[in-house]
Figure 1 (spheres, one colour):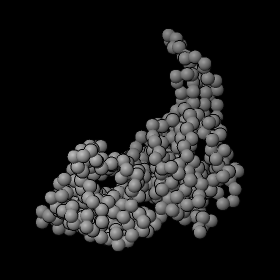
Figure 2 (cartoon, rainbow, N blue to C red):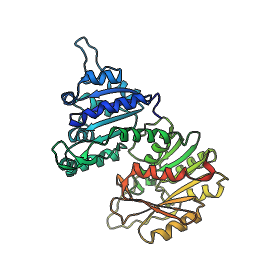
Figure 3 (cartoon, one colour):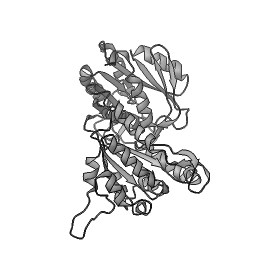
Figure 4 (cartoon, helix red, strand yellow):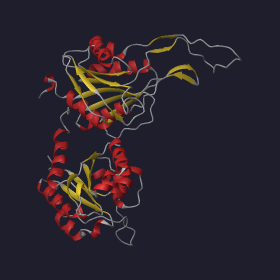
Length: 403
């Protein structure tokens, strides 16, 4: 799975840096090309000569390699890589990555990297358990980074606990597993809706909701990483996509989203409808800003918007898969099952506003997936990127998609 892959290996100042030699050897043995980027502190624990010999590439540590104007381009490195692995990752480097402190070549390369990033922490047990480190790791997860959890065992302090960098073979296995599933959606076309819709009242006001679009954008990135061609119909959100397999269509209103989704759906193999679409819109839209008159009430008459999920479900052809979302405040399972049946969905992703860390304005989510048979699969609280992976894992299990 790693043959021909370009891997950036970032090494930081930890006693576990000696394991980097085994990592390089294992990656190269499996056919990967490895470029080492090491922090100045990392060079205190393992020599660049050892790393260069094993990787067959000069080790990069500084921005400028000579005094003749030549420099190491973190941008070119970020474009070259199929994956970036930071192992060992110290608490200091994790904090810099989480907060964009680009004061060395490793963190600058990380910020420029377009490929998936794997982080293997290594530190003493109290440092790993500290709330600051836990918060920084949670933030990295929310960015889409993959954290390879450290193992428990004897540490450099001779204390025993969690913080020991995972063994090289297990880290390489995590990379292999990633590339093994990366192309499982190759050749598939997937429609995803994301974010809120805004329904105008006048030129400066609208009816809307709190959706950030993070769940839908995470789904789009995961699908694209696994080989799918994605059409992402996005409501007004402050998010960006980076994968070239994602075609983004920006809309504002439910009507615009309905038309864009309807146009894309016939050519798609699946639709994942994660947008929080407004059920109603104002019956009339004022051409000018409505002025507030003293002690005068305003009545806003609302009319229904088209039901995108129900409309697509009604024309769904054999072999197409539809996935819906249900964000509920009460009787969650009952409402989700009803929506599943009415809209001809294959499965539905249910979450509740009563769950802390789930729903709108969060980087995390806690969901239950319910399929047509009534089978329920519940997941713990995870980053939205991890939830997206769980949803796509469910999507690819459908028998009619088996190769």
